[in-house]
Length: 334
Length: 263
Image (cartoon, each protein chain N blue to C red):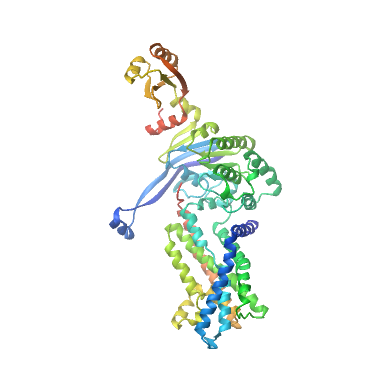
């Protein structure tokens, strides 16, 4: 069974356009001009139970809008949504019992009171029995290491501490489906690692389906086998992360640190016939070459034969760059 | 039901989170009532009664009006407006409860807290110094309690209505402020309605505002007698029911038009 099914989903917003200047502001008092913005434009996809799917896109690509429609907060303009076998917006109160949501940019805990009081309220709201709560939340609290934070008011927590508490709060009713909207935004590396590890365990242990949006590609690499990429409200890629990398991240990146200054013309000439692209690195005397697969030994030997080198580093093309390239071209080729 | 009770508890905790607010709250109530007492004794200037009310009755009227206000007053309209403005309403809508219902319960929690822990101590404090006259009949107190509950419902309904309008306008601080002044003025909080000119009194009889403060205060000061009490209660009950319709209607439309701002 699919956890999420979306067909021809569309969301349009009427956006009020302000005229410029004082005269314009007065005219706005009488008549307003609107433009129709299509935040989500005819997207279709399905997510199987137990999958972890990364939902990525630039700011304003329509990620959050999609999440808000999937969680029943916004009504779609048109299209069909079935999540956990229900129409989120129609049966909101029944539906939201089956999902957990974390919005990285807004807190769902009560600011002035201790974390455990928020938990206690949510426990009542979701009608979780004491027994269930102890068993499930005990584990969650251990895994996220938030035990010592429970009696502190939320306003006294650091961002990393708060985010782990938010995550725990979203899981009080052990939902089979979890939506995470930028859960690692602004967090340091250690907290990110902790959260990723936790999400993996959650997925393995309970088979929780997770849909997450993020700008941090390392989140995606650590967690998701599948990514859905969005641009201007349309899906431009839907498939495995592996395939995306194969198709886009072919070849390697070789960074040379030269002992003395070299010119790009010289390097171009050196690697003629190998389809190598040279770019100047950020440090002095560093040049980065993008080499097609299999060409690395040839490039290295040619360069090393002619120039004095201090260092050579070989990388895979990072996912972030793959994504950036895709956005620059606007669509996935092939 | 459990979850709503829990919310009342959370509101209590929130009110208690800042101690200074709590103590100054008591003081403010006492000062308010005392100020009105001195104002009215100056207006009476030795006269034994005005509009059928003695100075003692008037002081009690004022003290009770503020006591009642502590219970029925809440800022639900502002809270809703704020949640919509900064997009926090999204978090509320992913919870398995009725948004407006939960808001009303929060208002109730706040009201109960203020009534029992702010204004009753304040009233006790004031009654040591001022000649307040409380009725001895249990029936009067019972009617008053019922009337107060209706006041709360009507006031909260008006607030929810104003709050839901924010779903359409996004910014309506001006409207909310105007609503607040109108309620304070027309509900009989500042001046008993019997002091208004006849045409104004007739006009106000058709509006829900007098049901908020005037009716409970008239009941507790025993200015309403016999049938007037049950008439008053009936008017209040009618407004409770009547105001529900526009809210339900607007809410249904509002949910579809919701735009979550910021991210």
